[in-house]
Image (cartoon, rainbow, N blue to C red; front, side):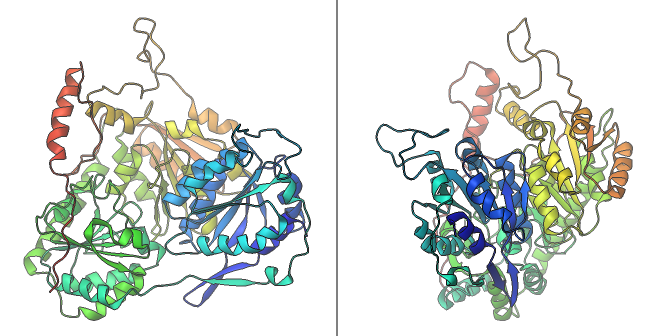
Length: 621
């Protein structure tokens, strides 16, 4: 077999097992062929049609699609992504970073320079005067969980099992890069038959050590105002039922990170919703007073912790349940290095009589009711002449079904969606916010739809993201993947524009305006872009909605369609969703000639005083 044939044959025989159920791990190959992979991986795929190939329009989008698919499958399935040497390969770097940051398994097979070196420099080869052992694929090293370059055919015998070990790890998974020199891909070797037998990789559910678990139990039993912060690990572990059982028994409220939203249905009595810089009034006020924070499957990003200002109780301590030791030890917590579901079941069994006080239970209920009333208000502002973004979200939620999926990634949308979207079932809220990558939305949604075609997938994106990467609409049409896309035309980068104004810079460089002849700056007339015409030019169905009523009608039309539909709607600028006792540390210039910047700096200095290190460890009892 050639190296490429051996790799493809090996990969299609890899399976994973969790809770007694087996799944084929790789569902296919995504990519674009060029001179770095067409004669190797391309030829191997022709001979292996049971590992289907999908042609995408951008290599970065291929990795996004694979990441979206892996996330929607709770990391039990993924895709392989292949590219040519050079720009095809480096196009995947952003996607690799996204996958690794979000702990999502994606395998990258980029083409590489000639290993034999006599034909050099080959087209698109990066040369270095200090070494011949470097190329653009070395750029994948910091954004990959595992990286290797194959110089000899026999090296894949030991490399491929390492690839699978990392991809199936509950704590270390992320992007894996196997750089394949284009000449080596086509070289033949007599491989052992055992390499190609079916292999089943067990997805472990570690239970954690008894001492740490015992300390966590004591900390919870001694707490008066505990709060759970549910992260993505709850969903990856399929631990929603275990979480619901634990909090129904104890009365402990559950706040959700972006990745953990949907761990409980929004109407569960203990679900208090979004926490942190994009959090709501209920979760953030409970966080401020909590004396014990139980983090489950969270890495405590600055948005979750509101830049370490969310937890203000002087006595606050932490318990962290996480499969990754690196995350379990954060904020000086009692580290329970364990699977979320296993740990929650153990806590439920160990704390049969623990219950939050009636006063605290009443506070939780009152805050939750107040927040739900606030969501209803924001859903129906009746802003004129154009709707507010919160009204658009409300219309989308009312149109969606209980099992449908809402997907977004960047701009002002994640903040508003984190607060407002009422998730009803696990994985019904799909936000890529570990990297918040513009361009993820459409390919990521394609992956989510492929994971479960029975679920309608609603994509919420802005004009900035659309203009950056609309090309995968063609891929969705090619593969008959139905999506409902709501494209908000807000004439620029609304999120960064708002942030710029809050920092005293007036939204500089964030609106889609022509360059003014008078000022020489980008402060002229607003540009007019016909997004609906752009969508139609790619072959998709487009609808322009001028009001909430028209949006609702368009959503119903899209639901009945069997193809991708994009609904374009303009929103009212400057009508945002409040911050609700949250803050995000974005540095403001210490010295400026602009008065608004000086005012923002003064506020920034005061706000930073609330940042905490959380160095104190829980007291043993």
